[in-house]
Image 1 (cartoon, helix red, strand yellow):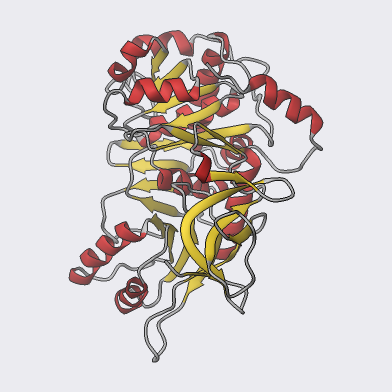
Image 2: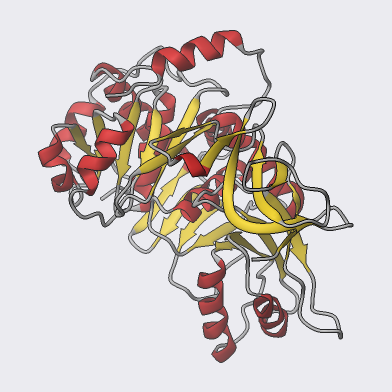
Length: 411
């Protein structure tokens, strides 16, 4: 149990990313762990995570992450090495991710419930040799031959807490990979997308410009390593706010991050309960939203802002964003998914990958530094070469450019 007391409670990317780091120009963009450290210094007593089992302050998370990062470095984790995160507690998950990033590693978050041969496939495709987990999830990795460290194991913490913090920390850089986001882990194929610190910072900056800061609370209803949990967690950390994992109920929120399907269930609950006070903004992340969801939102929560980020292909990095308005008298809102966010270039292409003229239908694809920079074990149709060089991510959705500069989903 991670509380405010001590915790009783065949591919490596290091060499390649080191070469890329030295070849790229310097940037003022912070790493995610440096962003968290700054928030911890400004408000060490502020809550970073508040859930039913307990809470975790920024200062405590920073201290714990530094100790675990030192343990990773001493256990042989090199710059750019992937490390799996498999925790059943949001507080443990945050500390594990911060520790990996401080050590210069790449976070590989996996679902809380995975069935065999899921662990073996994830370990193989990621190349990870180490796992930060909970005692309840450690058994899943016993047969994989990986170094597994349970954050809530008293014996392990006794050894980790005795270590002197490594003087080389933190070791990450803005253009280093921060995450390997695994997809289709329970299907026939396991693949993943590599996202660097800079892309996350671009995405966070775009959201803050659109939705504002989240200096109070950000609610989310997914497990500790769920895609939307990562999105909500870093929005809260960037704002010095608090991540609040909770059930699908609208009470006690300031801001929240949901998928369209999750939010439909939230509205069902809200329709039969008293309207929550102080709910400032809802951000929908994922695929296209049902148009009638907007009507239901403004009927139930007329004073709460509703924003949407189109983040297809199983990712959390938005391609387009928009703020939604109450439906006009002419009917429900259209099928637009907004305008491209900064540092993302949206392309509408034909089956051969060639751009089509405005108004013509094609597949919605995207490139840009605010998106994953590489793919591991990905199918060729998900990522292709563009005519003239470069690569693009494919969404699997058909759409077209509208005359107002927004993207419209057609199928």
